[in-house]
Amino acid sequence: MTVAIEMGHTTAGALATLDLEELLATRLLVQGNSGSGKSHLLRRLLEQSAPWVQQTIIDPEGDFVTLTDRFGHLVIDAEDHTERGLQIAGERVRIHRVSTVLNLEGLDAENQMRRAAAFLGGLFETARDHWYPMLVVVDEAQLFAPSVAGEVSDEARKLSLGAMTNLMCRGRKRGLAGVIATQRLAKLAKNVAAEASNFLMGRTFLDIDMARAADLLGMERRQADAFRDLERGQFMALGPALSRRPLGLRIGPTDTGPRNATPRLMPLPEATLEDPRALILAAPPPESIRPQRRPSPDLLGQLAAAKSAVLEVRPETMEQPLDAEELTKRRERMDHILGAVLAEPDAGFRAVGVLYQEFVVRCRIEGLGSAVPDLNDFRRMLTRARAGLGSDLVEDDAWQDVSARASLLPEDMQGIFMMIARAAKEGWPCPSDIAIARAYGSHSLRRARHLLTYIEEQGLIVCQLDGAGRRIVTLVELAWATAPGDPNAEDLLVE
Image (cartoon, rainbow, N blue to C red; front, side, top):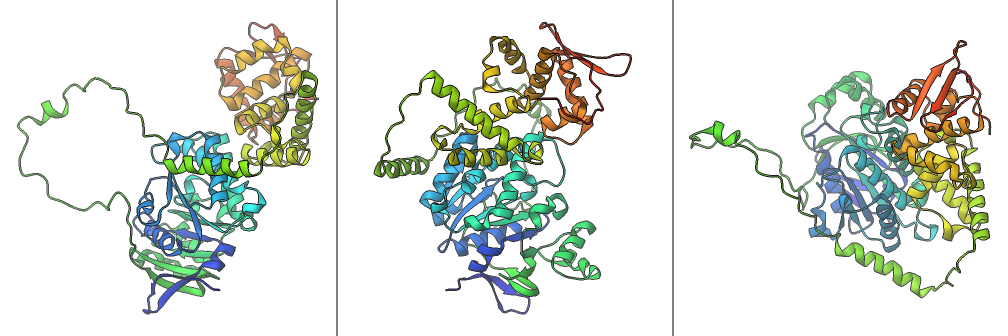
């Protein structure tokens, strides 16, 4: 049965429809400058398709939380939950088929990326038995899949970009249909945008964005100027779910609206203040403790209870405590699995979330599914593995001081410090810039040198060059020093 979603009317006055089943198989990209009606389009699509398919919305501004009143969407305030909690919530959302809005309002850019990536990871990693059809709408997608690095950390960008790439590139087989909206195509990662087969292009003014929009719609470059003349709510449509030829359409009305209405002009107050300077520049009131946000929604607790009920229906024998020898063997097996993951080509440059997904799958294959660490523990394992440290070496008493000093650094730099510490302890040559960059997950040799400078500025190491230009790194207070090593060497640290 074909489900036709009414999106509005064409410029000729005919009814404009969207084939929902085709959309689930081919994905959608929406572009439009601020004020073009992009969010209104998404709201129309969500309202019209709500009775037919499960939905989730990645909402950076909290615009779509009003869907809960009319359509019963569960609003998850990301600020109230950890990354691990959101990952589990994503899994439960798919298991129990609850439509949701992930409200990222109130978080800075980096935490928005991290929490969105965790939630999308939960949706993506759900067991095959629960791969039901689902619309995944991502508003302001350029925030989560940027084309270039910005102010956020490399790790946050990799996590978010990896999750968005999984959604658009591999989500279809898992029942996930990505609908991504962006203000500017030039700011959106090309490998994410390229996976969409349906396009709705709204008003835009920059030449580079108009040219890309025209190319995606199969229009000639001289026709690209038409995007400047589109009115609010007007879009050019193309794709198997919309039209086989570029088609102009106007989006119809919606039943719900955003919490914040579009600003409108209003007269200034007629009464004037007697002393505006004294009022505006008065001493600020004493700082007070910020009120606690209300607890997580009850529906989220109901999801947890529902999952517990499912597990109670299929009771499993409780795992018996393991003795020290068995725990050691388990750690060794996990170290071996992680080593196999990192041995794959370009593993050093893949997002932590992607590596974690592969690690979990391999652990399940090896019968270690019940012992899989959470994402935070996996990050620590990855830090040690990239530094060349196994579980046995980490537990050595000599490494307690190293771990304590490493904890003074940002999490993504701790592995670099440990790698240098191990080279110093063993008397190996100082790692090259290539080795440091790869351990950090970067191609940039300049970033590798910046990392060493930063760690030295924190008073943890001292870097020197000998007469031949080779680098020696000494660990402060530990009296460990690396052997001289060529910073420009192409080979990696041994072992």
